[in-house]
Image 1 (cartoon, one colour):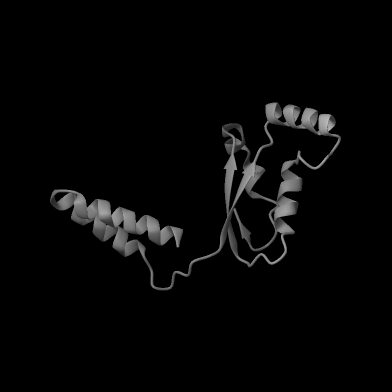
Image 2 (tube, rainbow, N blue to C red):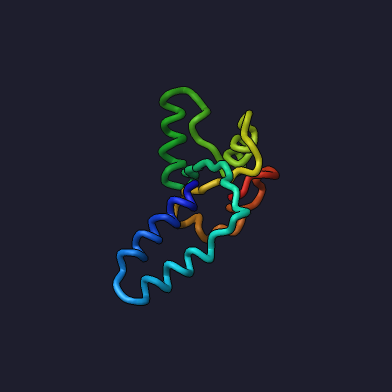
Length: 116
């Protein structure tokens, strides 16, 4: 659904563009679509695991006398994988801090059927 929405917006921009460049872009986008495409369910996961957040988080847990706020990367992937009723495959949109973009393991250790 999201992909088709983006395609619609690109088409609208292509229609509004002047000259042949707009027509060329519109044809390229039209060729990207495939009749066999099936929308997949998706979810967003915000991974707050950078050091400054974890320090704040641990202090908050101490102050509130609980231990369920802070999670490691491993705990997050495990909890997401254990969500009941989650259909597979599911696309996982990851929201991470810039420092995690260079972490090559951010895309690994997800349960089968979860596609980060």
